[in-house]
Length: 414
Image 1: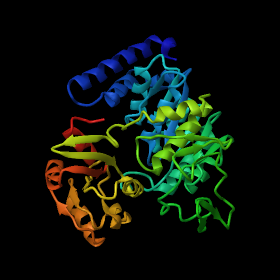
Image 2: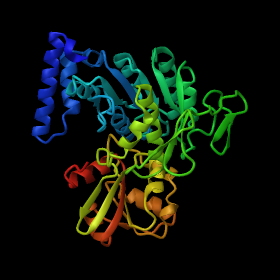
Image 3: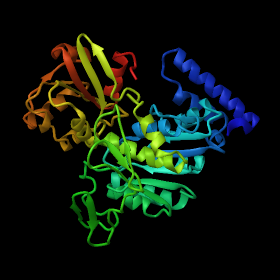
Image 4: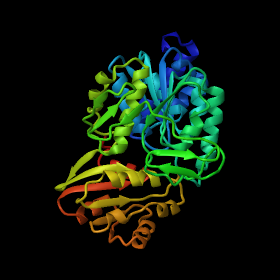
C-alpha cells in the first residue's frame, strides 16, 4: 500500500490532498477530480503506486455502478477498511483521489467508467472485475454499445491477467465480453432493457429468448448458468450452494436486489461470509443523492437518477403507484446533447397520474409525453414543480445534470 511510496509520489499525494481540500473549501466540488489531476501531473504513475499491495475490485457497466460499488464497500467493510470512490468520480483522477484519501485501506472498491476499464486493469491489477450491463448511453459522445462490448472483450483477453470476473449472465453483451476470461462468476442480475441485445454480438444472428434464458441458434452463444441469483420469491439472494441470504434493503426495486447479489458475489471472493455481509447492505439508504428522501413544504420527495432508456425503465419500476411524478431532463455535455433517446422510453405507465415536467429540455420531454398520451404540466424548475403538486409523497426522476441541479437546490443531499 502507500506506505512505500517514493518521495515524488508522497509529494504528489500531499498536493492532491491540498488541492482537494481547497476545492471543498471554496465550494467548487468535493475535490476528487482536481485533486487526482494535480497528483497525476506531478507523478503520472501515482494511481498505480497507490493501488500497489491492495486487494482491488473494479465495477463497471452502463447502469448501477455507483450503487453496486456502495453495496460492495459495505460488504467488504465487514473484514477491513475499504478505499472507494462510491460517490461517482469514476475516471482515473477520481480513483487516484480515493486511494490517496485512504492510504491504510487494504481493500479498494472502485467504480470505473466503461471507457477507462482497460486503463484501470493495467494500473490497479484488480483481484476482481465486476461487469454489470451494457446499453445505449450518450451516443453523441460515447461509443456504440456493441463496439464497446468488443473493446471490453479485447481488453479482458489481453489485460485481465489473474483477475476473477463477476459478470451478468442475463446480458448477452456482457457474456460475450467476459467469455474470453478463464475465471468467471456468473450472476443472474437481470435485463429489463433488451433493445440493445436483440442480435448476437458474436455472429450477428437473431437471439432467441425464453423467459430468462437466451441463446443464439447460429453460433451457440447462450446464457451461462448463474452461480448467484435473486430469489424468485421474497427479498433474498441465492448463493452457489443454494443458500438464501435475506435482504432488507432500503433501496427500492429488483434492480437493487440484483446489485446486492453482485456485491455479495464480489465480497465472497475477498473471503467475506455472505451471511455476515448481507445485513450490512441494509445500512445503505442513499448513494450520492440517489434514492434520497427530502422534505419540502409538506412534500416528501424521493430522488431517482435515470440517465438513459434502461435507467428510466428501471426507475418507473421503482416508483410507487399513486404519488405525483416530477420528470426533469437536461442535455448538457455530460448528459449528451442529443435527446432523441427519450423516444426509446415507454412513458405509458405514467398515464392517469399527475406528471410535472421541468429541466432545460422540458419541451422535448413534453412532446414525448404527448406522443404517449400522458397528461402533464410544464414548469420552470424544481421549486415550481414542488408548488404544482399536493402535499404528500412525490417521485422525482431526473437525468444526470438535472439530478445534480436538484441536489444543489437541496444542499447536495446524500
